[in-house]
Length: 254
Ligand code: ADP
Image (cartoon, rainbow, N blue to C red; front, side):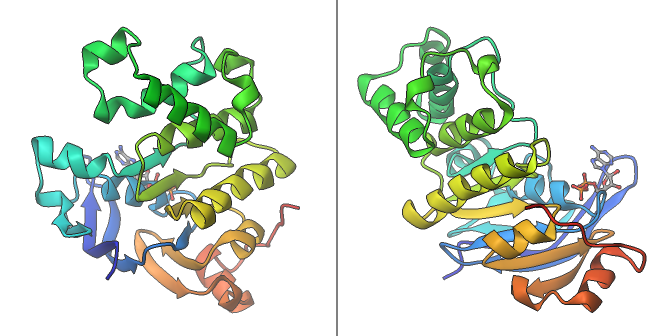
């Protein structure tokens, strides 16, 4: 059974921009799905529509047995807590320690008062340390987040998302702010949590070379329309130009 299904999803922003047009695809448990396309093609909108950060205009998003776009209140929060997200700019609290940032990921299972007071259980702290060790940063637990490099900050963001014990992790251009070698390091940690913890990943990426290395399947958006769905190895030169335009030249990140 599919873990996630997008069924004819369309999204029009209040200003009239139609960012997604009848996008349909399904995601099986354990996949590492990569979404590609030019800047402005709708990739970020798609991820935000999946976890209902943006309401969709028509169509449906099914997650496990639930139609997410029909849920509200507690029921929506419950389902959404199983969908983690990381962002291009990491979105950590800079002046707080790495451990506090990771613990913030437990918000869905902690009362607001407790989290504001920093009253996390011993079990939550152990869990946070475990996820920090998975991303190779347990030795940085008590360092301020803004003392870490960009790649390390993104790894903290991955550990924070893991605190939700997500079924799916949405990664919105997770390496767009990083240099090439750091990009691979972050992608390898995403691959690790996909393969070892079984977390399904949906990741927006810019560079095709990364797509070919890490994706198990690819979808491509162009002006909000899904123009490709298939294996990364099947994206030949013709497909490349269909997706990125006639004048595009492939650059690789090594
Ligand atoms: P990508 O992630 O592929 O760069 P986006 O999903 O960010 O693409 O954007 C898709 C389209 O929607 C673009 O035309 C963009 O300008 C527009 N858009 C994105 N966010 C908003 C918003 N909050 N309000 C209005 N238009 C938006």
